[in-house]
Image (cartoon, rainbow, N blue to C red; front, top):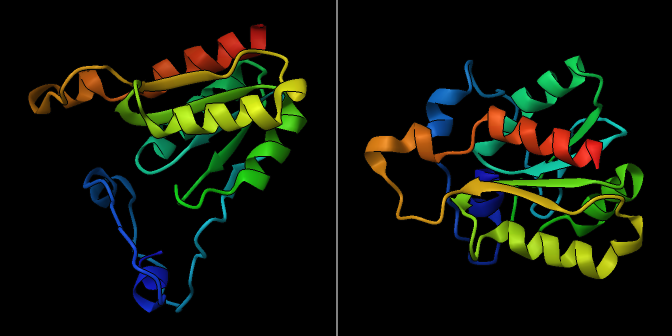
Length: 168
């Protein structure tokens, strides 16, 4: 995505959490490729609950999806990759398939980006939803750098939301 930002003609604000630098082992692919803006990636196919995440929260969501599978809940995991634009088509198709949505962000719950996604789901996917849209987010407090692990949503909080959505 950095290549797309550098090579594109439009201005881009590129933000990435430092946690991603130490969170993904291995070297990046050597081939020259561009990940287009506004195209989500389906990281895991599932039929029971759609989990939508981006950035560092993708790793917590992936671990929660693995744990949910062990409990018999098949999670479809979408990585938004970009927020503006976000892949509304992929989101709507996935939620239409599963009937449930869990939105994950590390930002505080109030005024976070997942509220925008929830609003879009309420406008365009209401009749596909079989459960309330659930959000897993940071707490509505200033970010406590000394307590980062306690603040950030972990796979345990994501798994609890997946179970709640699946059991509704």
